[in-house]
Image: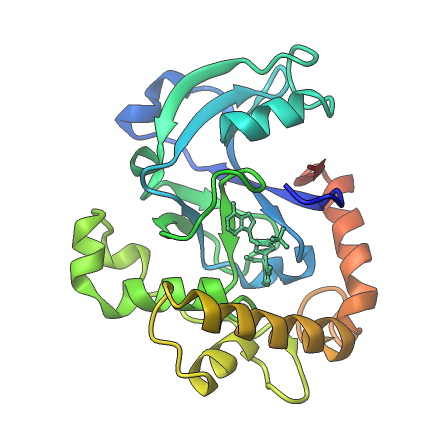
Length: 253
Ligand code: A2H
């Protein structure tokens, strides 16, 4: 972990019932994949969520009604931030791994796609955030390449039991304009840098640097309540709104 504390927004991606067999014991509760993001203003463009297939997760009681699926490490941090049924003591209802989560259908705040699916990404870190990532391929080069890999490689889908209908219908949703990069900045930068897969770490770091700098400074919202507003002005407004309506919570580490 870095020296500077990082403030994330945790997006509550609700698992849509009926639950699959491996989650059946959670039936009757409100269960969320809680995804850590630094870009709450991009939530309109969500196409899926990401988990690490071999990652270890748990279903933790946050309060009387809500259950968050996150890593144990994140659950402990949450418990020290008043996000646990019992203060400073995470209680897990169920141990899970990434494979158990792949294919879950989700409803996520602000997303134009009404239902999105949980999919595998091999570069998810289990020692950052919650180990759950929400995917916005229009504006995140990592998300764009990981979705591109799944779309273009039937063998990769087969390896992780990913059904075509969880991936193929989902297109990049334009949500932010960046003068230099257009309305699908992550796609453009990945193509310009000739990035071939989610595993090209160095090129992806460069792509992230380019889109992040320009996006925050020069980006304009194309959609939503704050269409036409600069990204840097819309971001805190959208974050506050999500927190206020209880579709997100704050999390720092
Ligand atoms: B961001 P930082 Cl549109 N493993 O959210 C890998 N990546 C993770 C993660 C984990 N355990 N937890 C969070 N992240 C991602 C949106 C987004 C993000 C956009 C553009 C850029 C971007 C949609 N994905 O991040 O190392 C999450 O993806 C660029 C870095 O703490 C989170 O924000 O700075 C970001 O990384 C946090 O990374």
